[in-house]
Length: 212
Ligand code: PRP
Ligand code: MG
Image (cartoon, rainbow, N blue to C red; front, side):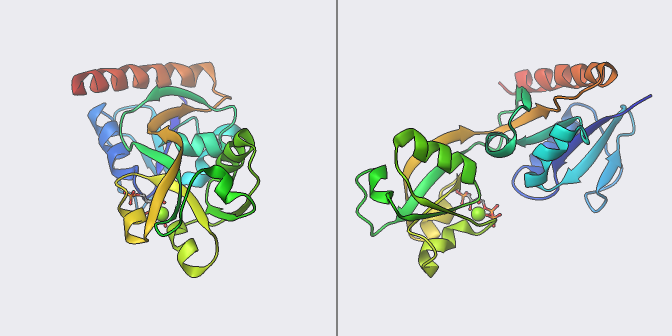
């Protein structure tokens, strides 16, 4: 019998609550996250611990069948991947921020300026929508340092508590989108696996209802 392959974030902001959710729906995992793959004891499920940014491609290719992932990552690089369920945790927003000292009157102030981000597609779409052209610099982490080291005039990254912005003397000036953890599904799912997923989704809905 085939098993449903579910990807969760290997480490980072979604990891703990993703594992908690799996536990709450009765999927107990034997080994810890030092393994990159774990089997559930009591359900036809395998859990893969992966890097956030890699998960959309694995879903597209059908290497994994489903994933618990931030909506923001799906919007950035998950075109064609469906969302089965919003999970209500790890809420954040994707924002543009600039140095506190900068006088900011609107997005046109960033015309011709450099924006450092790990979300180039999301930023470009927003700039296009507003008719502003700026230079996007892709960085994969610690994005908020960019203005302080002279790499860019602005940044775009996720904001949750706001403490990273605060510590780096930045202020939020544009909110591009809001995000939370979601259950994402591969576009190439077999019927057999869909049936397992349906069961999981049903259990998730019960857990979420209980939280209301
Ligand atoms: C994330 C994100 C922001 C920060 C937002 O970074 O990239 O920098 O958290 O959270 P806050 O508003 O609560 O401060 P993370 O710590 O995951 O590190 P990374 O960017 O280097 O991957
Ligand atoms: Mg960061």
